Length: 545
Image 1: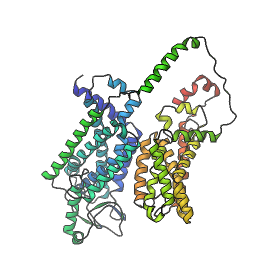
Image 2: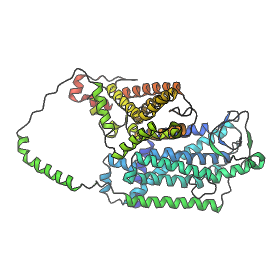
Image 3: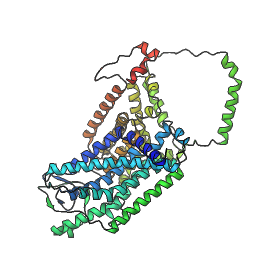
Image 4: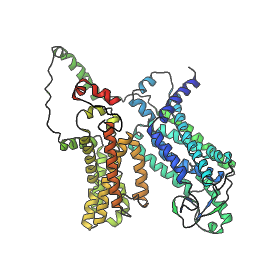
């Protein structure tokens, strides 16, 4: 098999695997929704891209520029979390050892992963472009289609940015310290950094998303028709902006692609290639970590011990009889869940949590109020494992045979709520001491909402990534930036009733899906499981159906 064929089959396998996943369908659904929501009618009462209360006519040039800006900005967030664990999945499913035994080189394996992720991002980008094309027809402000106006920004703006993103999905997956939640937080900060640079620093080389090339040209054209824009500070920004009355429009015919813009975009392509080379150099080819001397001596002792006791095992042994308990104590399950959730963290994490509790308890509230939301980032690794641990470690059937699913569900939920309240204990005590009952109630509801959200999303997706990306975005827009209705902690505005309703809805949704997954709730044909099936293994066969 030649190089081109091996690349083709590796990329084909990765592409098919991604397009068959639920996360791909979720991102595609979000892309179609964005295509609808970000092209509001003239009388909709809001705008997504704000230039002093005016916007361009919905022609091919305007919508092509909009889809290029929005896709690079949003796909960087959702696409990374969707694609970032391709190499880790190969190792988890025991495919990595097979790949390591083949003659495929590191650079070929890494580049095939990058290219397959790049193709998935291109597919999502094209779906979003077609959604904006459809909205051009639906809005009916211009029926003249110009494919070049749609695909020139796609070629010069979106593709270089998405290639860098595809390279980062692999780089973060081969560096050991960036594989988990730390890498997810670092990337989220990186996304915010490049977003701010693209909007706040015109003509900057670090405009990775390429927003300024399109945005500045739109603002310049608007200023020619509306003089007040030239004197105002409205330089074009994304968000939700209510508009009263019918919005004024102007005609924008697109960007003149000069050599300066093209040179910057080519530079980012080169950076992406460098990241691919660095990833192939860092990639350890699925080698196991070396044992230290103590572990080596211990394993040698265990081998000798097994040789000594081999004759004893041959003579036979007896298992202790099974003692069936009449009822399962929920307190024991909660205790076990708490030990599992808190296991594996370094002493520095515990010190950071203690410091956060002490700081929020003893420092004046008026000085630390804006920093309080950062306390709700510390347990994110604990929340993200709720509802996903059994699937990740392939212990789902084992857990189902040990206790009723509802007991397990509420043990996980109560444990998550308890840890959240424990981390927030300094804030809650301080609110009570200051007599701020409203803030206290809002924070308690927020402490109930986050574990409920994580458990529901974990059961739905079976992966940590969906909760991590949604929560990080929700946390950044709500408690940090005070966006209305997204502040689940009630720091700026309190929406206690709304979040109580959301808690109940997410709990009911999670319980329903869990019961369907375990076979206790059937929407169609019912497969009855008897005690005989459990004893003979028929349960597992019916569970697979």
